[in-house]
Image (cartoon, rainbow, N blue to C red):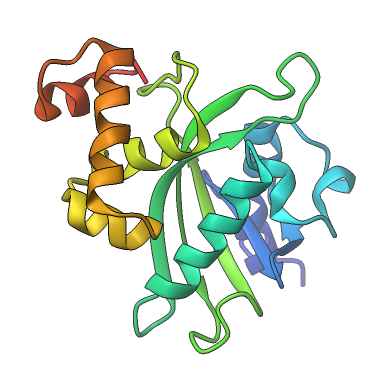
Length: 188
């Protein structure tokens, strides 16, 4: 019997982008993810997640953060800037909430399931930010201190403050709370 509410249908019709991965390569994805990134299934299946990132550096840094910050159940979540692929939108950057689970927390990239939510409807990316500025912006939105951001990013708290100052100049923010508000309003 072909039940219309089987697991495959639930995966395929989920209202959020879903990806199954092995060794940071996409082995399956659903329709919502394809629509979000403007891609065809054959463009993504078997490919590294790297093609969805603005740069190789951000792909590598994110992989390191995931491995270092999984919780005991193998869960991880953050907000980051991703890259669209489809015609007319290829290369367009957008804010995305990514959450997921490594199936084996001891080997974070061996296999996992990841959910992607496009945040562009409520948070546009209008400034030209560097890879590091995008990372600092995402962590500012999470409410982390310079010390915690530095630890996550592998840089000194002072260097984090330099990036924060650059973001404040680019957005015209006068204070850190003002900067966070502007980033959340889509001025970043």
